[in-house]
Length: 311
Image 1 (spheres, rainbow, N blue to C red):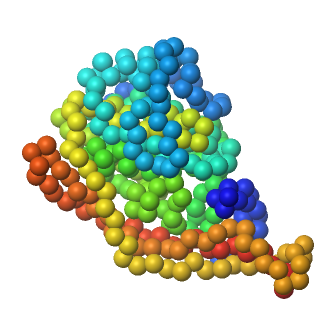
Image 2: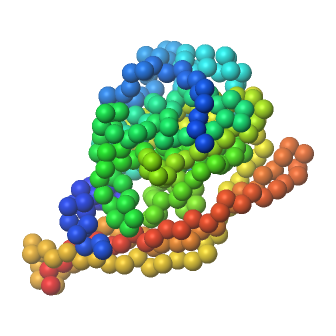
Image 3: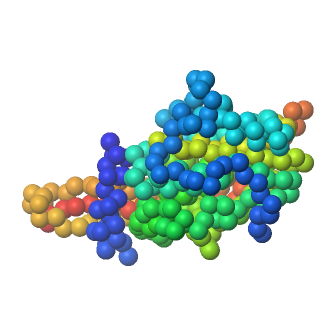
C-alpha cells in the first residue's frame, strides 16, 4: 500500500516537495519493425505464432527463463541467422504501479533495443540505441531522479532498461564498459544492481567479449520488463554478492497542510536510508573453478520522508 501511495503522489512531490528539498556501436543489426508502440505490448502480438506459451510473471524483479517471445517469428529468425540459440541470461524487472509515462517509455525503449546483434568485441550503448530521450523520438514525461530530488522529465523511466541490461550482461559474464548507479535507491532492483542513464552525460555500455554474436531481445508487458541475451554457448554460473559498507538516515521534509487537524502529521512519501554498497560476483566455471569479479562501490543518497502537517 505504501509503495502504491508512493507512485500516486509523485505528481504531488514534483509540484510541492521539490520546493522543500534543498566508444560507439558499429554495424549493429536489428530485427524489429521501424514502427514503435503506441500502447502496452502484450504477448499475443501479431508477430508471434498462435501457440500458447507459458511466461514467467514474477512479483519481484529477478532471473526468469520462460519468456514472452518464445514463438515470435522475428526472434526465431534472428536466432537462426546469427546462431544465437543459447539463452545466456534473462531478467525481469517488475515496476510496481508505474505511472503511465514511465511504463510507456520503458516499453518504447525496449522496442528500440529489441533485436540488436552484437558481434564479438562490439560495444552496446543504450544512449546510442534508444536515445535521445525526446518527444521527437516518441518519449513521454516520466519520473526521474535529479540529484536528491524527484522530478518529471521527458523519457523518465528509461533507467529501468539500463538496470535490466546491467543484470543480464553481468549474469552473462560480459564486460561492463560504463555504468552509473542512481543517486538514490530504486525500488525495483537491489542496491548495487541498478544503472542510470542521462543522454550526453551518463550511458550504460557493455562489450560482447565472447567469440560469437550476442542477440538482445526485450519486451515490456504491462508492469514487467523482460530482457534476455542469447549466444552460442552458455556462460559460467554468475552469482551476485553485496556488502553494505555504511548507511545514512533519511531526512524528513515538512509541508504545512491546513486541511489536517491541528498537530496532525501525514507521511505522503516513505523515506529510504542512503547507503554505500560494495558489489562483486562469484563466477563458477563448468570444471568447478571459481573467481571473483569486483563491480565497485555504489553510493546512494537517502530518499527523504515527505510529511504534511498542521502545526
